[in-house]
Image 1 (cartoon, rainbow, N blue to C red):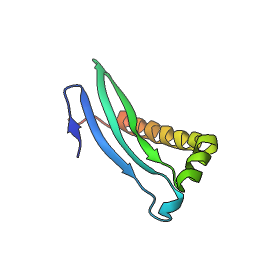
Image 2: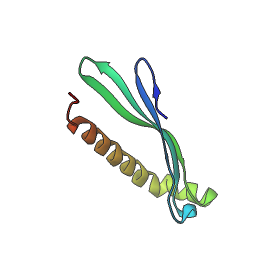
Image 3: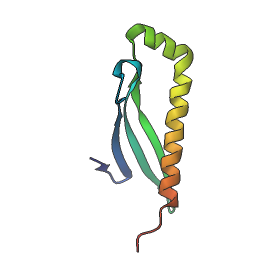
Image 4: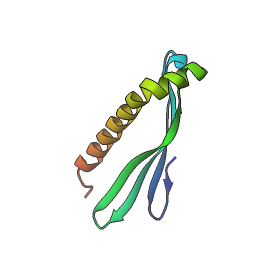
Length: 91
C-alpha cells in the first residue's frame, strides 16, 4: 500500500522471478514520487536487490551483472515516468 507524505508518495515494490527463483535476483524497493516545484515531480526507485547463488552470485554481480540490473531498473523507471506523464488529466 502506498504511503502518502507531505512531500510525495512512496509505493513499495517487490520483484521476484516467477520461475527459477535461484537464478534471478530479488528486488525490494520503494517507488518514490516527490513534489519539487509548481509543476515538477521527481520519480526514483530506491532499494536493494540480492543476487542469486550466494557468494558466487555476489562476485559475478560485482564484476558483470550489476550494470545489467541497473540498466533494467532504469529502463523500468523511465517507462513508468513516460506512462505517468502521458496520462490524460482527470476532469
